[in-house]
Image 1 (cartoon, helix red, strand yellow):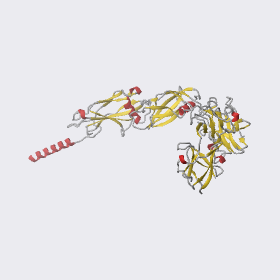
Image 2 (tube, helix red, strand yellow):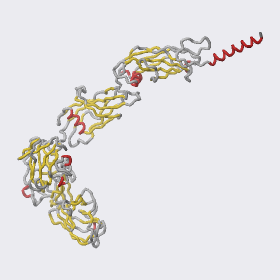
Image 3 (cartoon, one colour):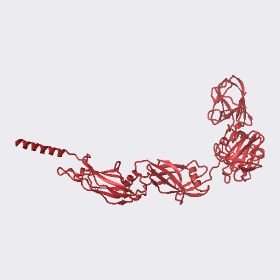
Image 4 (cartoon, helix red, strand yellow):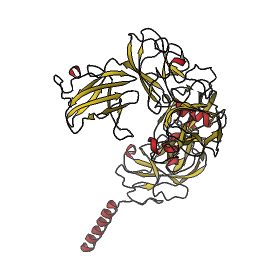
Length: 595
């Protein structure tokens, strides 16, 4: 009997130990154990069955979740709760979640709820059913229980960017087209969303509702600058004619990685537009032989005509000063293709004409076309000095050939002339004055009240008189068809400098001791000098560095004479054999020979 009693005590003790050590992780537990209860599954409720927040609700509470106490054997303030969210019918395999400690309720703001919905790829404005449940546990995640599942209908809202600009009005001009007009900036769309968001800046005519919006990719950036030229292009694309005012509507389109789309506020920009640049080129039989090759009749490599930017001439009147071989034929193209081209005869320009424009004799020509009146003119290409400060005075008929400049390249003239102090002067390309017609055969004269290096104006301003009477070097430079400029500097001397001079008292690269050339007139300088073999020289228009200088621009077409340049280049090499040589520097022709 005693042994039976001991066995009964042992069985009871074992049952007690097993019950005490049992650890529950059943997510659902509807019936508590009769002894040593650890808790029960909480019951979850929602304050709403359906919610449709708006942008104004971003920081406001839009839904409150409450739940019953799971009755753990602990301080209830340490109980851990996790609200889980999944699409309707989901298994909570990869849920969105929010953790709460101790409390028996929690809220979501409009933005918090929106972020959850966007994470599932829900579209803005489209109602969806979401499943929500609550997991309870001790702080260390033991004894986890799941609540019932609550379903609510939710609708994501447009939590979009705010678009701003540095200015609200842009006045664009052709002369300042490269300058910054404004910078658009915008805040992030879908704040709180952790996926990628890409942005597109859209624009359309004000009041059109972006029915035909133009897109500008902005990637993941939050700002984008634009030049005046770019804003002008936007205006022209929307039918704001050059020279008029219009309003453009801009907005930001934001797209999440899962395809949700929102649009920002609309920003209205007032634009004062300008006429766009239309560029004309020459293509013809002259190209390969004059350095515009390698192939003839190729618009892609042809020279560009200068645009006459005067009022009433912009995008209409174009011209070029160019050397053409004999029997040259050519056409004018709009852009660097044959999509739009002009030919013609007898001064009449014809779009798409089978007739080529022609010159019979080799020479420098001024070719002028007007794409509005469809007229053209082919005249002698020349430039000279006129005015009270020059030998020709104000009589154009006295200019050529005595006071002519030399044509150094396409749209480039160089000339040396005497100018008298305090007297105005100009450069002119014909032997008569203009008549104000802006016609293709009208004379052109050039000047400016601004100093050396500045832009020239046509048929208006004169140059101010020089401070000191003397010989000057003047350069008319239209190689940049967007900006015709000039240079002027004293031409009192020209020196040969370098380490290739074998003359007594001449130091290597020492301008002050270098020999001076003799001026022969018409831009020609000469000197007879003893040279070392295979050394370097250059030409300097002064007795110290910083003066105007010439360097090697490569062999001319004859294969013997070298071309010169002043923008920077290689030094000239002296001949392979040492000896006495005559050097001729021709600034009008922009060549040098060593014989």
